[in-house]
Length: 128
Image (cartoon, rainbow, N blue to C red; front, side, top):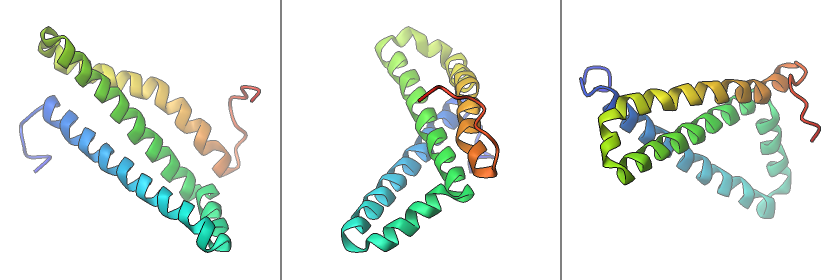
């Protein structure tokens, strides 16, 4: 349905916003469960932390960050259109702007998260 429907950018923004929201909700549920493991089985909790530190965990962390970032940017786009109704004429341009910001900021951040998982030195050292 997603590929056949001719709703355009507005429908895609809606679908991606919902998908990102469900992904964030799933992470929160997983996070509550793994924190619960601390009190029930600390050894299993340590194993879960090892999974998070693995390359697969880094990919998941990167996807979670992407979902959070898209959801936040698209939410700001929706807020702008709600508070200034005249901007709804430019909803396509605003949505493309969300993607421009998403990639300009998101790709370097994704690289920063993923590089250590594959044995590469972190490209940016912020002295933290």
